[in-house]
Amino acid sequence: MIEINRLIEQAHSLTPLPATTVRLAQLVCSPDCYLEDVAELIGFDSALTMKLLRAANSAASASAVHYGTVKEAVSRLGTAQVLAFAVACSTRPFLQRGLPEYGLDEGALWRHSVAAAVAAEVVPELCRVDVPPESFTAALLHDVGKLVMARFLTPEIRGSIQRANELDHLSQREAETLLLSVHHGELGGIIAQHWKLPVRVVQGITHHHTPDQGMDVICDVTYLANEIAKDIEAGVDGRPFEFVISPEVAVRLHISPKIMESLCPIAALRYAQVSRRYSAV
Image 1 (cartoon, rainbow, N blue to C red):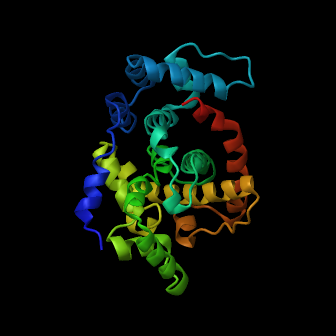
Image 2 (tube, rainbow, N blue to C red):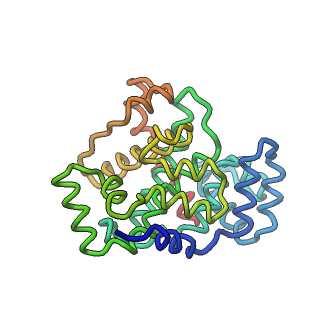
């Protein structure tokens, strides 16, 4: 058993998010958020401004429109997507790393994270509940806890997790909790707190495998985005994947069986279209 304090200490060791990104998160989640304020804040960060304009123009590459100002770019992408993009700019170096402890090659976690963020963009268009703007960021960062958890997954612990999976039919999350006192979702929530991200982002990350415990729509959306991302990746890799989600989540999001069938194909198409945005990070 590993002491939880050691895991928390390692979670706090990750490089903090830039001040601009932290302020942007607070601003976007405020009820008094205005496009002009978001554009002004980003405008003082030259590196983020350059990347955002590149991303906005990449997303609009099929049209003749060219975005030359931050305000135009924010208007094109929307404040919620701009926040997720700003967070992606800061976290991509971490999320790009290979995590052999989870069977993930270099870049695999990043691609999964982007697919989940794109899925979180699609869900509000099809469900009949108000989806908070923090959902895109929570979906992007839902697996960030794996970055720290992997440091503690020794061959012995991985073997114990595998036996728990095979013999006791425990999920990865359940096995992590049994052996490490915490699972990667909870550890990701600790990281998000350390990064001073909004409370609802912390909730979405923490409960992306346990939405019933989260008791917030952001937990349902992040959970669903994660499952859609798995389906997108399976389609890209040509692997079979059975897309099944919690009936309780479907009820809370007011997603009918007919809508459920269209979620993954729409998200997969959108992923192919907008992943260029994140390649500009």
